[in-house]
Image (cartoon, rainbow, N blue to C red; front, side, top):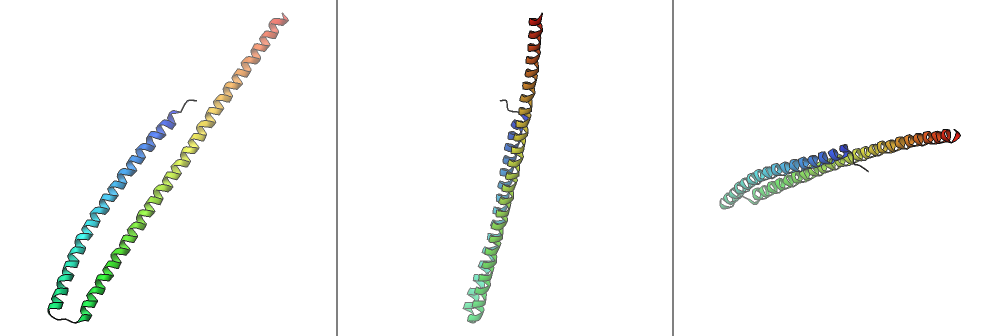
Length: 149
């Protein structure tokens, strides 16, 4: 059986689409890494200033409650960073699920196209069988006419 040109073009288009999706994912990863690097630098500055203020408070003999409060603020910031990382993981999971749904829909469209092509081929075969049947009946009629003469 011959493969229709639409199916070949569909395969090519799908390959182009997957390449584009991979490029988009790479851009997203690069952007996320850049943002993560910026946040890391900001956190490092925050931590350094906290350490400096903690050293100063220790050297000036400030009380334990202030140091504990600074530690609590640091723990709170770490919890916020962890929740931000969790939200980022959830967003990535959502994007991956959306991509998977897109691939499923594309698969359904491909199956529908294949079924349509198969129906077209079956219709064509049926038409040729009918034409052949008509030709055979005409030959039989011709033979009967010749034998009757």
